[in-house]
Amino acid sequence: MNHLLWPDWYFEDITYIPAGFFEKNKIRYLICDIDNTLVSYTDPLPTPPVLDFFETLEREGVQLAFVSNNSKQRVTTFAEPTGKPAVYSAAKPLRRGVRAAMNAIHATLEECAMLGDQLLTDGLAAKNIGMRMILVNPIKDDKKNMLFRTKRRIERPVLRNYLKQHAINDPRPWKSLKTRRKK
Ligand SMILES: [Mg+2]
Image (cartoon, rainbow, N blue to C red; front, side, top):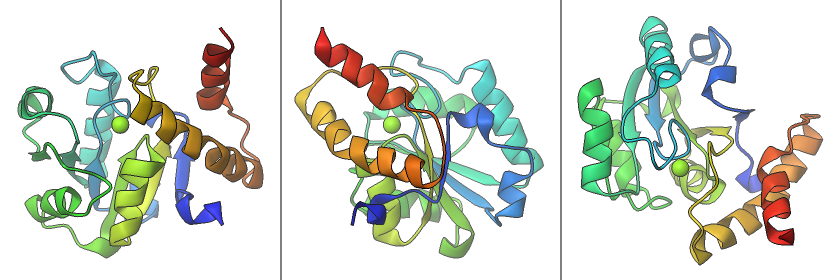
C-alpha cells in the first residue's frame, strides 16, 4: 500500500544525480524544493555544490523553478541571485504552489519532475498533480517540532520499504532519527 508514496527516483543528495539524468528521462522542467533538498535551513544562499547543480541543469536544458512552504523572505533571499522563479508559502502537499511554479516556467506535466526531501509534502504534492518525483535525503536534521517528527515517522517505513525493494543500501535518514530518539 505504501508504494503509492514511492518516489520515481531516489538519490542520496543532488550530487549523486548522474550526468545526463535529466536528458535521459526527458525532464525539461524541474520544480525544486529548497530547504533540506538543496541547502539546510540555516544556509540563506545556494552553496557551491548547489551552484554546480544549477549549471548541470542549464547544460542539460532544464528549466528550474523553486517551490517552498517557507516564508517570502527566506525564499526570495535564496532564489533572487539565481534569477529563477520561486513560489513561497506554497502549502505543499496542496497543488496550487506547484502549479504556480509550473506556470512560471511554462512547464508541461509530461516533461516535469519534482525534486524534494519529504515524501509527505514534496512527494505528495507531485503525486497529487501526477508529476514524477525525485527524492533526496534531507541535508540536515529536521526542525525539531512535532509536525516534522510525525511526518518523518510516517515516511520512514515507506522509504525503508522502497529502498529494500530497490536494493539500495543507504539507511541514513532513519538511522539518525533512531539514534536521536534513544538519547
Ligand atoms: Mg524540504
